[in-house]
Image (cartoon, rainbow, N blue to C red):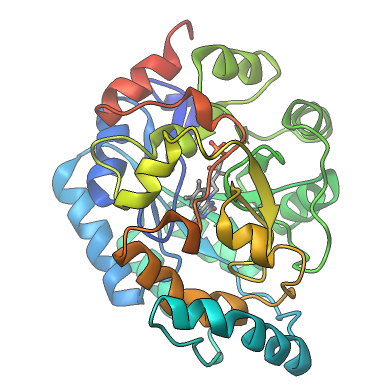
Length: 341
Ligand SMILES: Cc1cc2nc3c(=O)[nH]c(=O)nc-3n(C[C@H](O)[C@H](O)[C@H](O)COP(=O)(O)O)c2cc1C
């Protein structure tokens, strides 16, 4: 029987956070606390992704969700990438790293869909676009509940027409990449509450709310506005089970980092993170072009992390990052759910 989001003991989803923060232990801890933990497939090989599902399964008998990046045509131009390569070169040299050569990459889309069909997780969510009706139907036939991330009412209508079982409405407050279907469009700045109200009013299917939710009052607010559950990412970044790297963890509690910005500087796609030395230097000059820009900056970002330097890497965080704290993920789930009843 297909899983229902209404069956969750606690209406809290631990957002998929690709690139390190999400771990099987984090996903399992959220699910074991009565919420729903997510395993992101982004940036992993299909084999590694399958391994993370198996590992999470060994840590929980509760439902788990997985998350895939939907491939999109890149907005990159050869000239734009070449110019950015030249601008990145001095900082790459500072970290003793190369500006990597971009290569074609659809994040292993077909192979990861095969992993989903084989392993049939209870929930599969998607970002950066809407899978075809055929893909969604194939998963539904395997008993997988499909969720499409949307950032405006038009995307919600596309996802509903394609047959999504549920929507994750991502507001501009969210940490990490915006899930906008069109990688060139400037993401909207209508607040989550407004977007949520519009999508809930227009569609009769479960709607998950995401973006800037890090307190019980935030969760209460979106449930009152018709969300079936609240999806929180940033709230778990400092949890014991998260794989958040050391300089990133330190930056989240360092008073020198005073604001978040939406930037394409790291990956060529808009994403929200703490403003740092990298965004100050490159935010205005970076081209759009995912995944090429993401690939180009990868080695220098890794070198900066290895050097313990938070100013050379992405520090994805939502607008409510100041309210977060560490501890066990299960306790964070309980704190977010306090007052839900
Ligand atoms: C570090 C980080 C990585 C993320 N990676 C993904 C991802 O792989 N897939 C996805 O759908 N969303 C990803 N997101 C976005 C979340 O799904 C969610 O929309 C966001 O965390 C909600 O906002 P909040 O961080 O303010 O709670 C990521 C967010 C963060 C902070």
